[in-house]
Image (cartoon, rainbow, N blue to C red; front, side, top):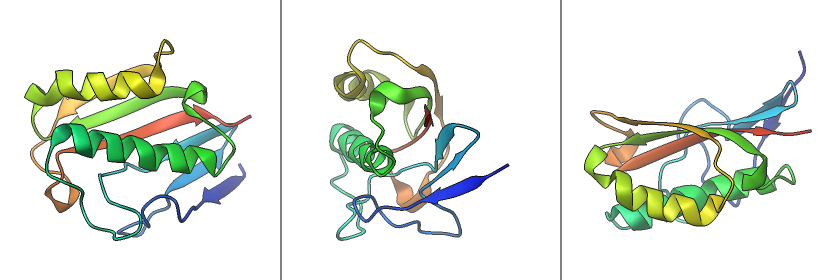
Length: 127
């Protein structure tokens, strides 16, 4: 099976031994994005709305690197430090997806990289 590494300077560089995304089998599989500013590589303000927006902008940049957008997303997984942030995340998330709603899982986790409040990964059709 062919695999293509996706890399863009418009999203944060990987902070470990992984790729921003891989295209394989007609799909783009993103790594989880945390709310890092791609220029400074620092976490943005510690506010769930600000962090959610940054994560979605990072994912938007990864999709754009393959000439894709959120309309091609078929599945997302959201990891939250606090599930009480669910509604605030939904408000920001819905601005990016509009009427289109991909399949989604949302879970609360004990800790995220760099102690961020949120991480999101996605799968998108790439054909």
